[in-house]
Length: 464
Image 1 (tube, helix red, strand yellow):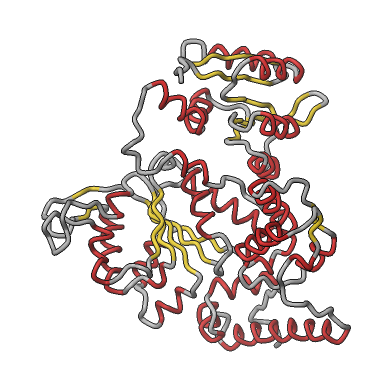
Image 2 (tube, one colour):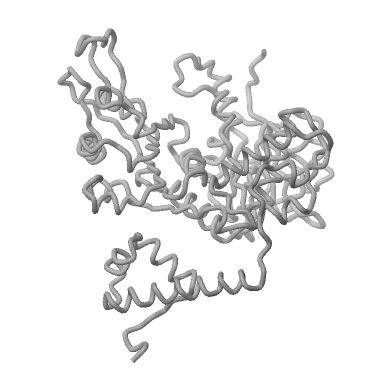
């Protein structure tokens, strides 16, 4: 395949001065730049030239730029898109990213900002690799695997949009360690990938490790590496996870289950960013970020002397909690539509639709397995379906009993009881949240969430 000399960029913006100035900035670079001030001209250029990157204004006369984005990603799926606008807001950013935009810049921006944004696009990096004839045989992560990483963020609830904002914030601080908590199946690793691949570390490895799956005999070798001949079976030098993730990210899943004897060594490596391979004396400097995740109450593990408090403080610079799917039922519909689209294409079963009964019933289901369970049941339903319409019988869930007025009263009573219990715990502990959370057997963060959920604003003058 012939290697193209230059990347081709189209700037589609109704402001002629903006397109001319930006085009002039690219004049002496390795870029072929095209300008369009109307959607019609833009479409002609897209159809005529093999455009690599589209810089698109989100507000065009008589046209919504997000509609153009959707059209472009449908017709040219390998084309990257950078959205620009003078009227940016978080809702627009989220919609653009969900529709496939790679980046979003708010006007006015510096030329260096657009240059960095271009360099960060996967398409531009791919072209760069072809231009410079870089060999990928020694790459720690192949392009094929990189393309499998889901950049889409599915959800419309306030809770999950807040998680997205927190992930974006974490991505902007690539030196800060992140702790992600949430029930099994909520998508903790997906959030870790969003953070990594949105950060300056994205061009280096993200290594995912199950902290509880490594045997004690291999702990040091796996994390620190070893020198040839350092023990029986060490037939070659080996890099450990810390060294492997230099300039990248080490994702430690199930961190609360990490063996206690490794925790002190992890703390030291995290603080000093210097490690020594087993059987060696040479110091190795490595720059890695740790994103860890757990579905356990890690603070309870600390209280029970199963997890080091100093390590928790080191890992918990930024904390992101992912609510369970039953706490955000409004996300079920966009999620299931997304999974239907994925698996209908994968199994060559186009035009699959869902009955209203499916959405109504699943909205009442508890989903103990969270998003992972919804994904699996959707995949199974599409595999086994005989026609194009999926009904609730295609989804294996326990029958849901319709609420009677008495059951609704019970729910209301349960809510009242929980509110009263939280209030009494706070009052008994003289409104010390940490002491109250210990008394209730939950974390302080969980207590704060319950106070926000039920709008509990007790004060010391209350009930006097």
